[in-house]
Image (cartoon, rainbow, N blue to C red; front, side, top):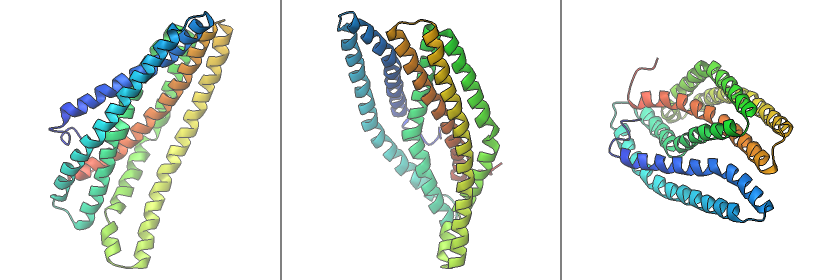
Length: 274
């Protein structure tokens, strides 16, 4: 993937800087909501003005990045696609790999910025939780460790299922070229079988992770209320917990995408698979 970005790395770095700036704004906003609430209840609009300014600046970063990224990754796809078609492989494999390359570019354009933003938000949210409520902060760390363990346990099967799907997908043009309905049904059935297996893993992992995030949210509300926090601080803690839960649920999904892309990139480079 690093080689694919050769010649475009400064622009990719600019995109990621904009992502971090956007994530920083989103991390600060829950804290500013608490400040704005306290200030307004005290008769001041200073907090509201600061909240609006940060919100507008965050929106500007997000808009500029999206305008920049769609043009950048269109050029990268064009160049990488031409290189993939020059490989010594059959038509069926080339066609499949060109479509797989689209998945890689989509990951770079959409998932990678979200992942970088999520990591930034993850760190920033933990920092604010540690400052606002140590028990909730520790609960968030425990939840994170459990989610990591859940996804780590299923990584090997995810790799195997993705490899099986991609092996069958590379046969698609050859199968369709034979114009045999029985072969075509069998091919589609195998693709569906691998897809269902991958979906089942995702469903179980998601259910377990969601259960942990709900448990953290309940724990945070009960614990924060018992600590006797003022309204603004309590609101900030609850918002940070919900944001942390969303981020913690998204990051493992990016790991699942990476496992799939690793196999795709090996095919695009004509490397032997493990």
